[in-house]
Image (tube, rainbow, N blue to C red; front, side, top):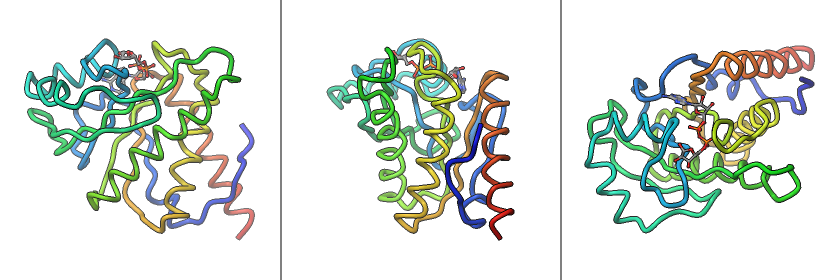
Length: 188
Ligand code: APR
């Protein structure tokens, strides 16, 4: 994938690509690829609710749902992470129904909450790339570009960990980040 942006080194040093299970993360917050009801589901949503325990669902019930692209904060309960940030990504149809913008907003609004809480680290899954069917390569680019843009624009740096459960996403994220880093070095 071609890098679409040059990113400064200090931002790149805050981005980490991990293969694994997000429920094991010890970041200040882990991000849940939720659905608008916030009442749990399968995939990473199911894994997070199973690991956090019933207290998480109880708090989610009090939130009254969340629109795609919006983000809501809850406690982490039995998780190692102190918080969970819930954000429904877009259901992908053909990329012409605002899906890219909604996916970007899911990452951006999660980071706004992290900044408001002065979090030192956050772990993201590959939002919308499972049940919601978002093409993994496009979603990977939106995820990494949005995080870099946010840190650049808001002058707020935190450790951002992309936790990929499947090998396909893991390879895509590593390749894209390597492209951006190489692009950056060539600009030095
Ligand atoms: N840790 C990290 N990532 C995970 C985990 C896990 N334990 N389990 C699954 N994933 C990955 C999937 O491999 C996929 O790459 O999370 C990514 C997002 O997939 P989904 O969980 O299916 O989420 P999404 O595509 O955003 O669909 C959301 O699915 O589970 C329901 O309630 C949820 O309705 C909502 C929809």
